[in-house]
Image (cartoon, one colour):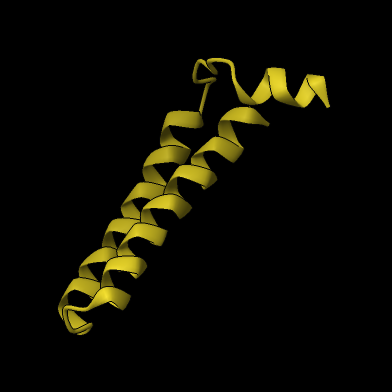
Length: 67
């Protein structure tokens, strides 16, 4: 477990190819964000959808960086 903690809480400098992976994920998420903005009425649910989309991008990119 301590090895996982060390890995999760250290800086992960981008390795070759990773910035491009991050950009692909952000780009696709941005398309979905615009779709949600256009199609979903302003509401708590819309706010949560946007927040969780941001979290998805964060965790996907963390998965690339950490592994």
